[in-house]
Image (tube, rainbow, N blue to C red; front, side, top):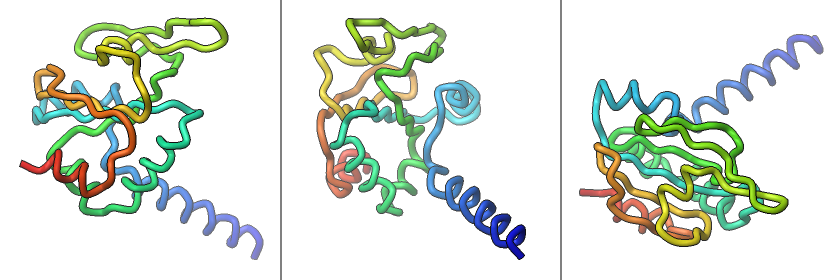
Length: 149
């Protein structure tokens, strides 16, 4: 009985977790998806310490219309600007740049013109040209308005 209970909880957790983020694409997946179907790219840059970023995530996770728009019309990437992983984007490799006790990933500096505040939304064309930036919390309706044609 215990085994059945734990198995059902594990399956529910795994299935629920995958279903929630079907609108998110990784940098690894992006080149293959773009080769099949070019689309604009939306990158939400965040950090682990950013409380406003967590609020933004909750808004996106609650809004099914926004998720549908992101999944069907864009490639949406959630990017930790302080990631220490090497990232290949648009044929170039970006690495972590240490600074004091922290640092930033080189891709975050390449995508922004000024010092970032998080979350930062970066809107790219299908050929990876920066169209616009938005800093701070965007309400779901505002974000849908920015993304709708």
